[in-house]
Length: 261
Image (cartoon, rainbow, N blue to C red; front, top):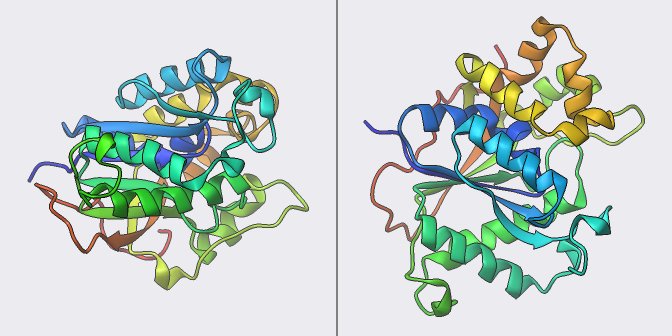
């Protein structure tokens, strides 16, 4: 069975590689169409260029940027509104246009917490994506955004409590809140070890984040065994899209095991 086409929607350049880089690489290597929509940063910025490099490593095509500003760094998109402040209807419409143009079998995005860190842009990306996935299949919503298309499933990138206890000390800075979900909420656990080098290469393509000591920079300084422990498993919560008309499979490839092995 062919792997389903996959559209990943994340808040910032590097979120796609850190949260779902293994699954993106896995689907691309299996011949599936893959693409990434990024909510923040403008095309002519260094981080957009780094994103393009990361997507080449993952096999995910060209960057698709909504062009909003990062909530914590307005110069990320000079002259544009912060993503969290943009009219919700406008943001949903922009994303619907990408969904209808790409026509994915599945969509991947942040969970409702916005991942371990709970960044406000991550949380808002979750909200916009959930609405856009629903709206994309309804022909009377945003007709100017293209012919309707309903993805088969939506997958939320997450961390179960058990993994967060083990990994969170490295992935989240000391003193900051950490957000994870009960283990039983996780529906799909994917071993992305065979694609670890691609995932790590994509993470390190975000050079400005490496240089400033953000998570990509902290990862590069770790021994290979620790890098593998942190990045070789990805967890997701699957949500069906009830009025699905997508052609082809709507399942992300990976066993439904719940716990980190």
